[in-house]
Image (cartoon, rainbow, N blue to C red):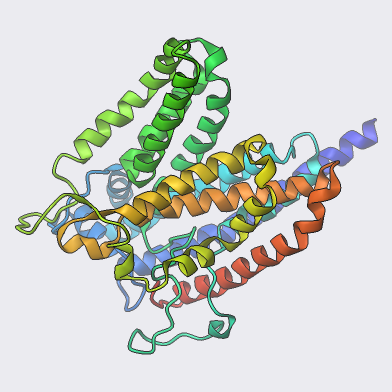
Length: 411
């Protein structure tokens, strides 16, 4: 018994060391990338220069009513300068994602009861943080400057990891925690029958913080949550009306933040062109993509294969089911909604879709790892196909990250 306990402690300690070793590399690479994006040393295309102007107190020509990243950047700038302050702020906020991701993967593959699986959760954490959209393998190791023959990778396909957009990356850890917490809360809120609940408070706080960092996740998530809760309410013939409001009130802080953010926001100051949100299928997406069905496949080949092989048991798989629902809501928003005026070409509704890809990859990885240990062996026959697609996403992700770290265009 004592020997088994020592062995368990050794495994846990080894996993902690491995996680921290990889974490140090991830943080170092992140800071290098964000520092060069912020300093604008030639290449390293991103929105960082506009964010830097805000940190300096200059007029960037844009409104950014999501202050958390900027407040953190100003704080760190007091001890250095605006460039380093912004780089450190983005690095640290982004650095929360591996920790939260590690926790949820470990929990969902039952690694806390089976410590040997902790190594899988560590590997999965950094694998998911590197994977990208697929592109022709003939592109690997090649990069050419943007022009008529430019080898587009990200453009129109999008990626679960958008390291060129700081606000999306900074909001991601809070969005991730909100998403997984909601998945657990939604399964039991009808039985809770409580107005004050620790899980609800934590969920509400993370959702609000995510929104204060960037509202892209919240817009899609809020609509999904409203639809799911309303369907439950109708199915119960309004018997769970009390529980509906017991959970619903915890969305109020976030709703208030959104009302502030969308009071004439996301437009350049002094802009005289058409404003607002329009509805027209594929109008914005088609600005940067000629083959949308292919783009969807290239962006999510691995998770789509996992969904296909688990379609009959989808509702029993909490993580995969809710991540698919979020993905479909985000896909619909990207297809039908666009910002009027000159911002249409920015395709900003893709940011919610990017979160959908990230959640799908996470839930799909959890699913295939579970299949490896499941008593029912029938799903193991499909594992080679799924792992092969995951490997392709990883290969492209490593190559794509190499391009970003060398200062190449994210397109």
